[in-house]
Length: 358
Image (cartoon, rainbow, N blue to C red; front, side):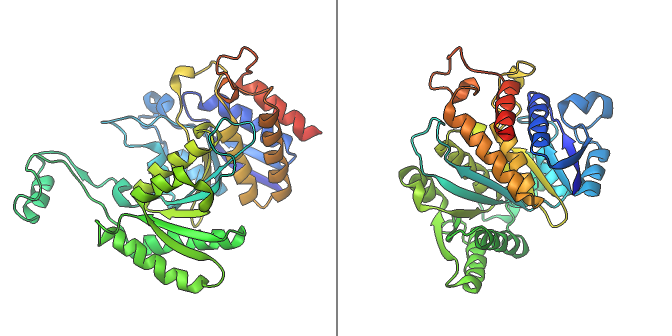
């Protein structure tokens, strides 16, 4: 079987990571026809936008996309290509496996957590009003007197029943499909009793449908940050609203060695997009230096999504073996980050391809 897949190189170090990942995926033997589309800061001048319409059209047509990292500006400017893609394509579920691999420097060795984050609403819906705007003033006037300082910017946190049902049910179905034992819902319902309270209520309702099959519990977001550091092996599948999921997923990545080994998938009702969870690291652009593991493992998740389980298993095994051997790995995977034997992005990809050929 052959697949036509949209490939978005991204910007910064994205193109070299994408090139390495494409070579590795082709080496698995899965027949993929790549349709290359460009997005990010590098296309701004030419197209006037970092996310041209043709990129979205390509993904909708092919149903599956693999994307390199894209720079997200801090402060003003275009909000985020990543967020725009999630909203435009209704990629409601962000799936981020955080798994220990022997050879990766970490304080822990037995972590195997899958974090599932609601991807389209909450504070990341982008309903914000700057200080002094008429909209901000109206919202301040609606609040009890003195509750909100008059010189405030306002961001709206919206948690819907539909969005909560969709993501929590996805988490339970994921756990059931992959032989997982427990789903933990994470929020701050002791303080945000209506928004986060709704998320928990929906979780309890859905959990009843899986009684005797999947265990369910709830942990407050601040408490889980402590518990994950103390005993990460206690957790299995986590499901969270958007903002908490973004923060806690980075914490989970830290448990297994960092964002360099943390893949990601964004799943919708019609399409799916796979990408590493780290940023574009523009200061290393063109230096053939950055770790391709997260990008390659994101490709592995894509193969699983396509039903290419054998190829996905072979690829993950090849990556794990290269990391465990510790020879043909990038500087960040060496015991000493200044180790002169560290290899580049493309050379680590070569080593993984060699494992695939064995």
